[in-house]
Length: 556
Image 1 (cartoon, one colour):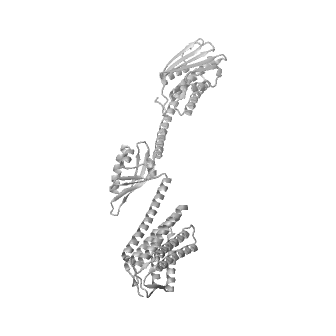
Image 2 (cartoon, rainbow, N blue to C red):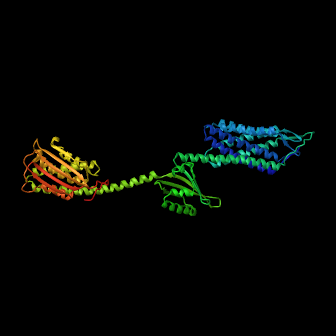
Image 3 (cartoon, helix red, strand yellow):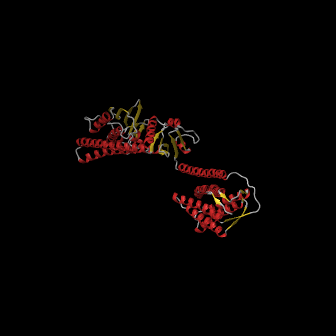
């Protein structure tokens, strides 16, 4: 018997085979990146997609087959052919999807898929019911098997090559053509012999059945593609989440704004909280809102990349980077990108700027203090030289005063030049003397750095005079220092007891003038110096300056 094939069904079968192969091989590549249960799920999805496309291609092609008499199909054998296609494909995908597959195993996998394609075809042909018996030419049957195995092996080899759309497309075309080529090679092997008994065959028109099968296959394949795209999206979101990065997209036509769960958390929202334009704008400062509106308009008009940092009302900063996506007509479709928390970076920049500012201030302060210290040293040297008659006396007096300044500098340096504790100043000055000869009484008082330098000179002169002529020159003498602080003013009284008799000097020496100059000048206070018979008494009072955190301190 003579038979022929309709070219419409041939073209439709080729499209279904290639499209199904592309989808299945794409799912096959996804399967290879999975592990555990996810790997098995994707194996099933890829196998169903591949088996369905092979079976659909065969069924569509058979609907275009006209043996010259009505045809029908045995449902059990038809279903068996579908299961064979899915099962054989699953075995081939599983073997070829293992890591480090050898060429031998790849050939075995290709043979398994080729055998599955052939088995599906010939079982499907066995389901055919018509007024003729079916026979086959052995040489063409063998050729169809070779075509199926060879093309399937080549397709699996091409599908294993990573990162190339060309190889994926080539593998899909080769596999799709292999399925079609194997089918029509096997149909060329078909020999129909008329039978005496006529068969009454009823059914739907072939075109309607072909459209129905193609539609069903399209649903399956599009579902598989959607699952693949969804898996890619979820993987991308998981990777972004691992990097503490959120995803966002804005649709200018509808005004719809959305973000991933991590993006919402970065914005200070809960992962399940809704997000729209109103909520987003309520999170921004007024300046950031204006900047955002201007930037969106610019991106939509020019197509430039979206790269900006906004400040939120809670003080935090967020960095948004994105790109304009257009449709096929070149119209803006959406702006999509990533979202990061930039608060730490802004804090780091602010800290660096503050550090640079403090460094400049410290350098200026150091320059200022060095000039002041050199001026003080020059004044001390000049006045000491006027009151001494020998070099030895000059060196002794000058060195002692420099050491007093040095001790105070050390104390101020230890406290970052933010000021000094009054008791510590006195303790440093009385350190060379016996502790039982000194009494210090008063509350904790912090003086500024400049006041500490002036007080150091005052205490040094008083202690030096007490050691030379007063209470500290004998074992029974004692120096009492009492101070009080009230309404921002310090009053300090120095009393010497138990020393030799004291009388007021005929003329004021350098030490007395240095004390008075320090109190009335640098401290802006008042001094009362008394030479009582029991010992020297000095009462000084001056306003306390706040000890600022700024290293510069108040101006001189």
